[in-house]
Image (cartoon, rainbow, N blue to C red; front, side):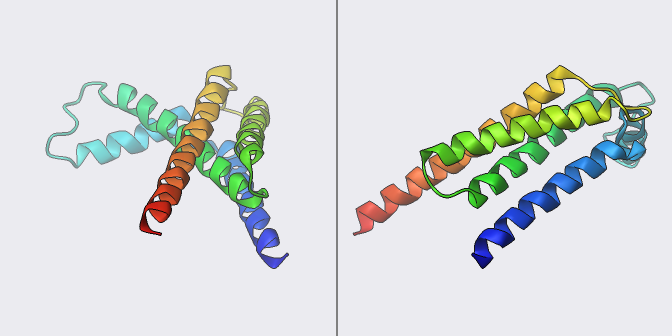
Length: 147
């Protein structure tokens, strides 16, 4: 029971982290672009004064979506009782949370809600769970071979 509470606590904490990202104006597109431009200006191959940070900003932001909802899906998968439906349940949870996150962002100044972000979040959850599934399969096969 203690382990189950700990696992669901991690899910709740990660949901709060995602909520905080959505709540904060620090994570608007313009702010992340400024940070990226500052980082690029220090790199030897970096910033030539052009607007190269825009495509990179887009990529970084979308990778952040994939990552944060991939982590959420894996945490939920770990918290749910094992079984095939754990993967589906974790994906549904992450996707529904992505929808509510975008809805929440629609009320925040400087933030926008985008259905494409929900799709990216959902893909991040799916890819993370696919990786977990493949890892678990490989781990089981390796164990079967060694026995």
